[in-house]
Amino acid sequence: MNDRLKALADAGVSIWLDDLSRERLTSGSLATLIHDSYVSGVTTNPTIFAKAIADADAYAEQVARLAAEGVSTDEAIRVITTDDVRSAADLFKPVYDDSESVDGRVSIEVEPGLARDTEKTIAQAKELWETVGRENVFVKIPATMEGLPAITATLAAGISVNVTLIFSLDRYKAVVDAFLTGLEQAIENGHDVSKLGSVASFFVSRVDTEVDKRLDAIGTDEAKALKGKAAIANARLAFQAYEEIFSSDRWREIETAGAKPQRPLWASTGVKDPAYPPTLYVDNLVTRGVVNTMPEATIKAAAEHSEVTGDTVRGDYAADRKVIDDLEKLGISYDEVVQVLEDEGVAKFDASWSELQDTVTAALKGAAK
Image 1 (cartoon, helix red, strand yellow):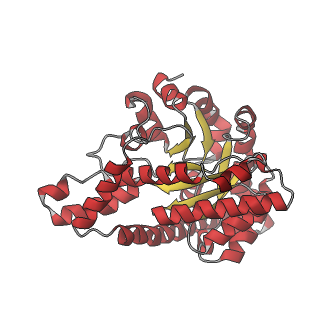
Image 2: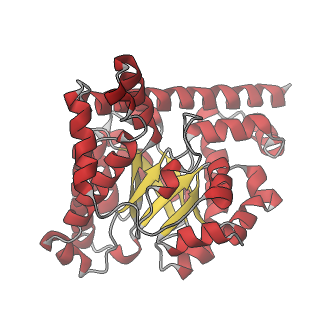
Image 3: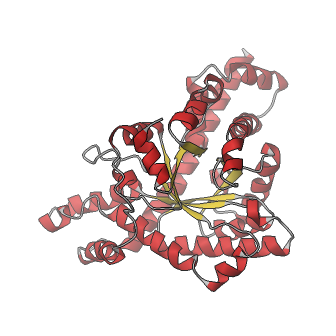
């Protein structure tokens, strides 16, 4: 077991893997990550599945069977991905039990094309939940305006939710409100909220990518000094909001029914700029009660280089706010940046779904020859 990753886990950060494939399940590599690298959950998305299906022979037998049955591309995607998520959920069940349903979670995403359709998102969330049939699964719903009521309705139905694609502080607060409302309704509906979980996936590195591009365009020394600071400041300010909301009277009332907080999840934590240390978004976002979902390369980098020196989130929110204020003074609008990122995020999700459809279509045609 790795001492650096143990230190990160001991500091209260749940290490989740941002990847899943049939090969990881059958080869035992995922089980090894659980045992040796303190991995306590998995997140997935269409791009991850497209790569897995394109790069491996592990799906060949199933694809051939589905092709023989004449199923559609979308139905094949549903069968393949839910099978993998179900198997991963079974693998993580001991972690889920040992953590009293906090960790050991596996996420599966609603179709990205539904990001602007509340009712269809709700319907597909219920369908995915029932198809996978494992209580330690999260259904991923994007934090668009249309996604917010879907988050509430899905939780109210007793379904655990991973809220994804959060960039702004205001939207994060709206997500938490949707979570609280969903729990209140779940309690009214008679659901056991002690096992009803949720995370709020706050995207990190993409913020620096967009802001740094604008800082480079300005080009002054003052602008250069702010590079690589926006994403961490934004995430820390989100945690400040988390602390405030989950110490409120409203939360305390919900908590009496056995509910657990919606944990912040740091997503997109692999660095995009090679000039930055590979553990930039790991070492600077350490605090108790959060999740950091990482690609395996970032987990390996953390195992080799991460230095856990204590809590690196709490303590100086004023300095984090100053980063955002200083960007505004340079003419970089926070509201504009986060809106651009959300729009790009939805577009990227759509593109990744198309990629997955193309990959599965090709695989089905190849198997049918």
